[in-house]
Length: 433
Ligand code: PMP
Image (tube, rainbow, N blue to C red; front, side, top):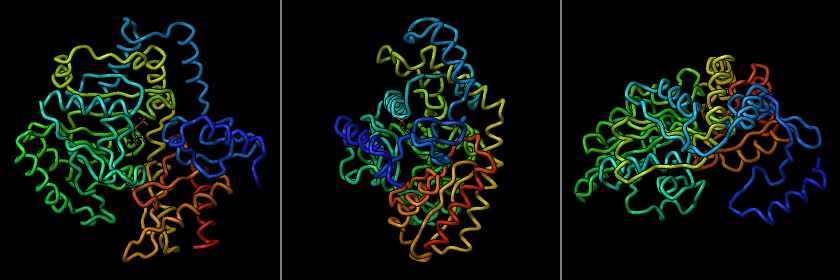
């Protein structure tokens, strides 16, 4: 059904006054006015299953979080240079969640800020400027986080406009990259070696390496076995720091692991987090060692006015409390395993469904036109997402070819909702592909 005229009129007003680059999902989006758990409701009363919202890890409209934020707002909210309990307690809890040695926290407001600061730390600590990153990556919109973002889906000019201190290396895409399958770390390392030799020859050193610990932007693709251990060793041998961008894949979403890097058996020098840690309240963090954090002291004071303010810290701690009380990481594992099996069954019946990537509630279903050439089914993926919307499911594509369904719902997703999503997807594929 066509949306109400008021919905279209509001969209036109949005487009008149919001910068054009701030695109919304869908050409004719529903006007969402309410959320509850993994469900969203539009102004016409239609319900949607929200399968893409990795910001709302607890689910929408959580009354305990709303009450905690409200109570703290009434009591105190101020900039983070005052001395108050919440910033101390939240930093202690983040340090306790992190591997030994990573005990020092910076609190900011977003993933872009966290990655920007992580890059600045790597550069300050090493005294070098060069950063290694991966192709097909997204790390944020601020100058430095954008500089290491190479995804051509987000920016078609990305590969020709990176600054000279950014060195992007082959995307270790174990499904469609130059080397395929889990035993390809050596191949991808071989592709990095000439880049490292070029940096060595330049004599200006290496500041660090940034990458997602499971390749989220590419569609939840696992890195080759042992990949991070080998790359980290090369980077550290040159005095560089290793940054794990856990903004999407960390914080329990993988179900089987709290942090994505655990699955690779490594410990990074710097962890960046955001998105789910505030369940939609603006919150981000950099977690590192005391020694690395000290390197910024040479530059003076670090200060984010609202990063780590009292309300933000209470929001962050309440999210952790609710995750534990409602066993959301375990739910991500159980429901995610079930959903992955249902999606894998689609591969047997529908040639377009090439592979299912990821784990827990971070999954990617990749659509291809041909299972040998792996030609990306880009237009088909967009059409599947549009059809799913009409069936009451919010789903979006990801990856450089926009041919992977990015499945990252709230971690409270029930088995019944997972089945509803799989049923609707099956229905759409039965209709046309
Ligand atoms: N890193 C990754 C892996 C992301 O996916 C994103 C956001 N999509 C960011 C960083 C930036 O986070 P934010 O939008 O909170 O600035």
